Length: 76
Image (tube, rainbow, N blue to C red; front, top):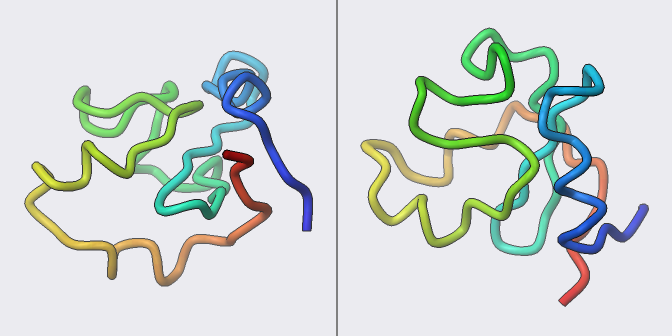
């Protein structure tokens, strides 16, 4: 599985067609999710970022990631 730096993750913000996010060290591909159109999730969260801390304020828990493909890990 590929390891991504935070800088590499930032490249997948939707501008190149791909959208990745990180949560608790895992990198997820949200490119095919209608919830991430234009690189943002409902105008609140941007792709290309580690959303671990932001998830504390989300109206849902990490179970939301169960059907999203894990494509790598985030380097510390």
